[in-house]
Image 1 (cartoon, rainbow, N blue to C red):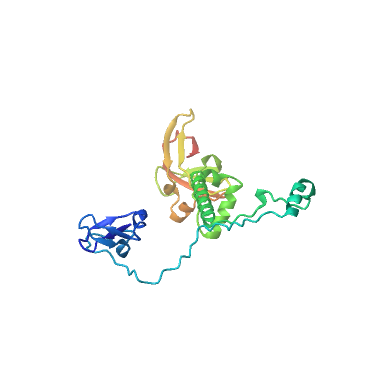
Image 2: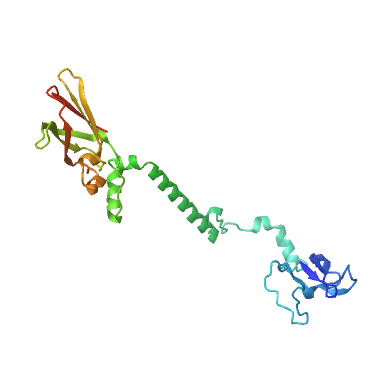
Length: 268
């Protein structure tokens, strides 16, 4: 607490015990003035610079003390009666404890404060955030899972979101293929393939590698086709190849000559 001398305006820091001996009056160590410290008593100093502390009127009606923290119980000293003294001697045999009931500590109802509710909400929020991070880190495995994947797809369809495409080239199956002379390009070949997505989820169109070889198995030509090379529609390419769907792929390559008698497909 702080107070200020009214004569020299010196500000002092006081403890509550200092105000007790003289009912709030103190002596200034600078100008030797005796003054009532309660008149300018303050819990904190105002921002600097300042000249005077706020003054309090000391002739008002005493305020009411409302917040009680302790009240001792009254002690009544009465001499015990003769009948009570005699009864106390036989208390061990006369008292009946058969009607007493005991309540275990865990069965007592405890009042929950708002602190407990706040901590519960914070813990639940942190657990949900951790679960969301783990789900995002393992999203490919969850989407590819035959049990969880359809549930996630149905949930996204309800809220209007789109699951990320999970590549699974091993679940692409080549159903049919054919090679023929290009109808409009000289020394060109037109290769068509029918590919099925055996996965239960949509996956991006793969990178297709086509290898042309001769009768001895020697590689004559090879080319890797990116999805944009054989799927012209951007919207179709972004939606990917649906689960269980079959699509036709058309590739244009240069004819390596009459020695090309075999070709092979691979997906990445």
